[in-house]
Length: 242
Image (cartoon, rainbow, N blue to C red; front, side, top):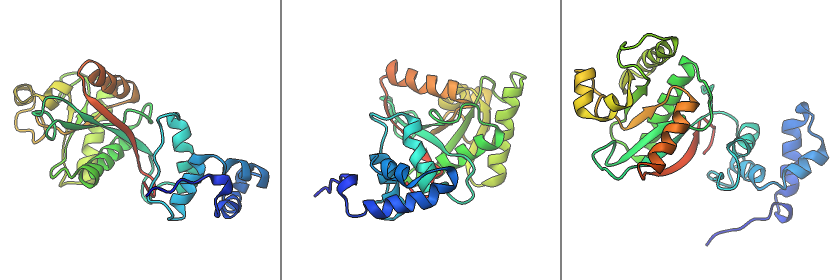
């Protein structure tokens, strides 16, 4: 029941070559370059999504994040109102007391190296939305992570997370979000109650937003390898189509 397509022999190949050329000629793409690019399964898949002949495309097992995102950025483009393409991992840990029955979303651990406060806020909002859409989280609880909890340390990196938290609350007052907080305060009730008394998120977060790519990428790999969690992703978000 699965259709397998070879771009070069597919009936839509000529039309997609022409369409890609028209889309990218201002960027220096020639008809010859368009014909060559459309032989790439990732670019062809993106064009099928753009053309509504496919619902989405999946890549990444044998392609880098950059190679996966490039056709999305060039063809599918960003969703209206979104300024930052980001990602999240679906982390499934063995201890079901964490997150949503053992499922926690980590964002952004794959794309944005050093997001500013506005970008962090957008990452948080998009991840919370996808928690509902993809994983049926009834109540996303977003922790904005830092090495500080509620002003326990002073640094511009802490200020960035605090500003991002305020921005999220401004843009979506109904979303349960809190920060800045350390990972143990976000996940462990005893620590959360001590460090963030009265927080709707502390000790029961099911979404963790990392302040930068270094901490996010290192964090998810440690949880995966040392904690034995299953890491699914990265799932990209912010595109006009999946």
